[in-house]
Image (tube, rainbow, N blue to C red; front, side, top):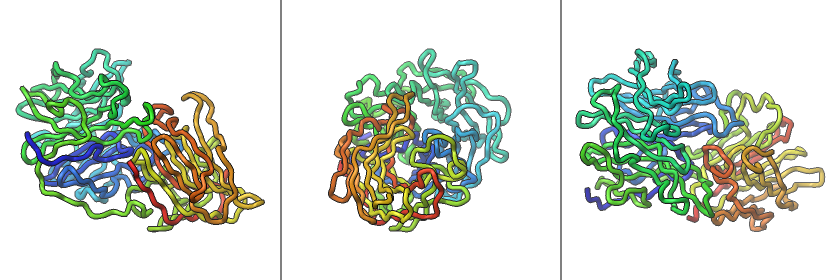
Length: 515
């Protein structure tokens, strides 16, 4: 199909992995994974596939999302979004002890229901499929006796439980395929199609597909598998890790695929983690062809000639914007008080990266942190900070990749006055000890403007226009330090081992993407 309009990839820049999409008449809705960040499962809306508006989150209450703030790559894995008979269904996995569950809503903006936990559903990456007769099926993955399988079972949408036994469907396109996961079922022209990811969610990631005349198989793998991968393009290609995809049919009969991929920069470093991309799909001889004539993900994605839709303007610098997240789920006393231009963070016991024994605050609350995703290779983030009067408290601005990798510029109250420190946190190898190094020190005032400026992997940690220290940021790539998330730019406060009643006050935050 020839199109005259294009979407720019990534359609959701920054840490938005594992996308799932559905269309309801002229409206498209898309969700992604959120791991240990709260609220969970961001949800987006579009009417033209080119412009996307975040309309909220699916998981907005502590009862829906118990989280451990100390394991950033835990929490919510791989949601699937589906719509049937007036109801939206979001199914996902909370790997921190909850397992698979479903939430429902009649309006994707919410409110969404409490979670309905699904018993006897092993694995991760669950998905729902509504057949033409209205019967619903759930599929997932398992590693029984060391052998990976994609399974399916009939699913009761009234009791939110499996009906009958789970049936094994497929083990993937490759013999002994690594990590067959992210299963999605579709029905087209008399065939059930089972599309999955395999190869692991890093460099060898791929999308493969099989089909069957029966929902429970047997499934025939496509001889042209994988239908999408970038592993053959090498690590010098500017888009990598393509996989974990979902298909959507447009009103004109054309098809598109959303998927995750990464943008390495400054070497093979993936600071922004896995982002959401999109490609066109056509069907030939009963099988999908991804980005025909090209065969890989490109920076521009042709889309149908839909009427231009411009979403409402959002001020993402406002702390009330849906782009902001806690780390961990606030339960009980929330350490963060949010206003449009003013943020107050209580100086609770845990430091930004807690070590040693968990305090009750760590167990029961989010950390004293609020952040938004890094979305550009080069950027500037700045905020004004007022330091509390109590000696020993700290507050500041951080680029946080995960538990083991961050850069921060912080203000600490000392007996002699306020001290500014530029700090790097890293692990020497994934299994080495957690290290913290002070890169630079400077005297500061009671209120300062803190700035982090990145030009590619070169970071400057600043007090206003004064550079306290510089650092190279490649160590914050997700594959360099481990984990499944992408970098957040956050504001934090800490009592450094003590729970204090005082608050750090942040105002006038600005994030500017440069490229």
